[in-house]
Image (cartoon, rainbow, N blue to C red):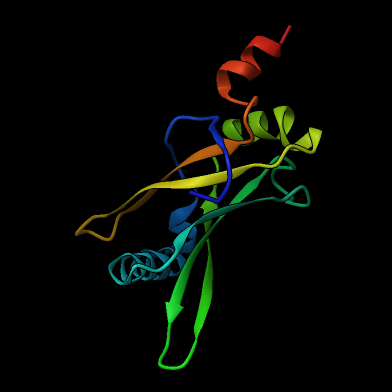
Length: 139
């Protein structure tokens, strides 16, 4: 979970398009597991991509994991997919378009024996922007 105070704005959502970025997804899943074992930082970041030719509401999911070498530490980043189109449209309309920061918590990584990968994230926003608060604010 990112630093600071955040509230949940979605349920655990599966990342879409992972199969198009399989090498990145595998690399991030393995880096996250290594980071967890070593007590290093890992998680996901969200990036609104209004220039996406398929969807101006697109929100990319970037996996990040701290990596420790012999003499230094670095942060690896892998574009692993996108939030679902409907979820991204709602988050963009309710939060991003109003300049409200969004973040995400990595909820789970599932790697099947057949090569299937599933990442679930929970979208977060500053207090006062929970799903319940956003629904109350809508006419």
